[in-house]
Length: 178
Ligand SMILES: CC(C)(COP(=O)(O)OP(=O)(O)OC[C@H]1O[C@@H](n2cnc3c(N)ncnc32)[C@H](O)[C@@H]1OP(=O)(O)O)[C@@H](O)C(=O)NCCC(=O)NCCS
Image (cartoon, rainbow, N blue to C red; front, side, top):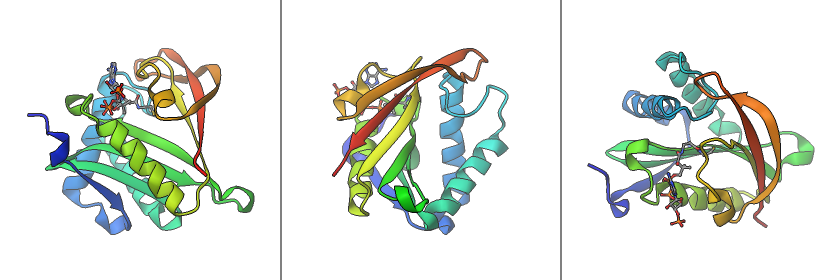
């Protein structure tokens, strides 16, 4: 059964130790779900659960050095977003917005919008002024980032592969959050 969004709590990860086995299982399932719908999220159709799990272990380990990881949870975690702050001295005002994912069983319920707005607030609260992202064009919900206040700044053809091996172009977006 799909959750009512009022039942869903948001959670910010503050320590790598928060990656418990059940949470890792949920997040692995979240990536597997995105790959199963052919979303270009860094993996291929033959990527394994262990590769998905390694991805999350690495991201959780980086929360101590500026990664903001947010999850939407309802019994299990049904969505994610990662904000990765630039570590070089001349770019600490910017961060990359990554892995905005909502499990296909829980989409179109407002979870993605809540993750985006909370990630923006969290980034701003630690002094980040500029967010940027790239997103494969093929399956992206039409106009979704523009509705959230992002500016599209360009398209690169044949940027990445979809899980099925076909090429997809990517759009770059940025959001000035000063
Ligand atoms: C993009 C994504 C995160 C959106 O999550 P979501 O929880 O479904 O988003 P919301 O429910 O908050 O919907 C936001 C808006 O998009 C619309 N929308 C969402 N999915 C839609 C779809 N499949 N078709 C048409 N509109 C859709 C909603 O109606 C809503 O519109 P509104 O602002 O006018 O009310 C989700 O589709 C997803 O995980 N996709 C796969 C991975 C991906 O593409 N990630 C983003 C690129 S990094």
